Amino acid sequence: MPLRSPTLHTRTPAVRTSSRAPVRARRPLGRVARSAVLVALAAGLVAAAPAPAPPLPPPLGVGDRLFPYLGNPGYDVLTYDIALAYPGRNDRPLAGVTHIRAVTTADLERVNLDFTHGTVSSVTVDGRRADFVSSDEDLVITPAARLDRGRVVDITVTHTSDPRGPADSGGWVRTSDGLAMANQADAAHRVFPCNDHPSDKAFFTFRITAPDRLTVVANGLPGGRERLGGRTTWTYRTAHPMATELAQVSIGDSTVLHRAGPHGLHVRDVVRTADRELLEPWLKDTPRHVEWMEGLVGPYPFENYGLVVADADTGFELETQTLSLFERRLFAESRYPAWYIRSVMVHELSHQWFGDSVSPRVWSDVWLNEGHATWYEARYAEQHGGPTLEARMKAAYAFSDQWRADGGPPAFPKPPVPGDKISIFRPVVYDGAALALYALRTEIGTEAFDRLERRWVAEHRDGTATTADFEALAAEVSGRDLGRFFDAWLYGTTTPPMPGHPDWHVQAPEPAPAAAQAGRGARSVSPVKLAVRGSDHVARAERPVRAGKPG
Image (cartoon, rainbow, N blue to C red; front, side, top):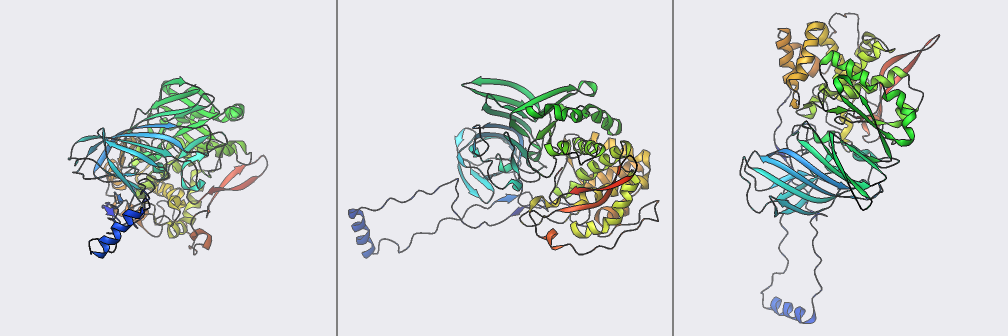
């Protein structure tokens, strides 16, 4: 059985000067001083070489198998209060102050935060100045006194947040009119200091200042606006805990569209003001999508919902909590059939239950996010003009061995390609994982499966959960020992026979092409064919799945 429990990891970084703890240049010695040094050398009073600098403290991690140095041990974050000042252009750093309240879970001489791509100017711990240094992608803080276990501690970091850099590295997304965020899987710490792992969820407050002409929207509920000197500070607070990778802030020349969802749910969409009429035919469907999902899995789990539609080239959509990120071109380009676009909207919506409300304890559990979102996407497509669920799953079954060879089993995916951390988002955790859910429903029956889905999101709401938790609940609901079933479907290197479908066959896997092994920029295309119904014929279209595609 593959190892499922994380262990603490550290690594020794290369010793280098940190940009966040600059070393002052030495002032040239004057004539008298030089003479004194020479005399001292002659007397043997000065060492021939300076003492070596002490090594940097190591970056830490919570031991995630796929991201061993992501997150930090020794504390649990309770709240983030993030203040950012946007200068009016998206090619300049934002000034920021991040306040973190946490409770220690161990005695700590130091506190490590994940942070990179910004400059830290000061740190305080409980109001007292603290020493700090950058070590790889960690900000290592040494408080004035040791922090005892069980203590609530307040950490304030004054820093910048730089939106410049490679577009595919995550964090800030530069749009045509401002900024948005795409932090999955490990890029929130490119925006603000944090414990950047989904196992440590917390409540968030955002205070974003921008020129009056711009609109700012973030996760959660609005907490008011304050105007001063041509700039407005917008405040938002989450009503439920959130993983750092799900944070969203949209800044731009935007309009916020409001509508009512089921049970009075507030639905808000953020669009470029110029795109309001273009996008309305799509966005007006969201309340019906929420109602459709509630009919299958139960009440929507958050305080509001909506889409932020960004004019940017990301290559994906993303389930940021209560405010999913979408590319404008998904709606603006007519080559996609309507049922497909709406099924993608349902995919991101279903993540609000699977992935956002119930978050993965470790990143190997990502199949619980993407497999479920793909499952409900496929079921919605079947009912609204797309291919049948059975046809899609049969096609997925044919390619399942190939996906496992390329990316590993659904619940034990291969580590990301070096230099391309989000390459964990491979077809095996999308359609490959949905295929495992299809097999489970066939194995235990539709009634038991539907009860399992409802209980899963209800019992783990606002928390984190593991594959083992899902296996245990499935066994409880069905009243059966499903150990061998899950071992084969979730951890096997080859695809088991499909229950009830002895005529389904897998294709022999082929070696991965060189491009798929190249890392950053490589793309894979899911071989699952989606039938597009025409007036007098059936065309065929491939569903694009980019390597490293979140969402």
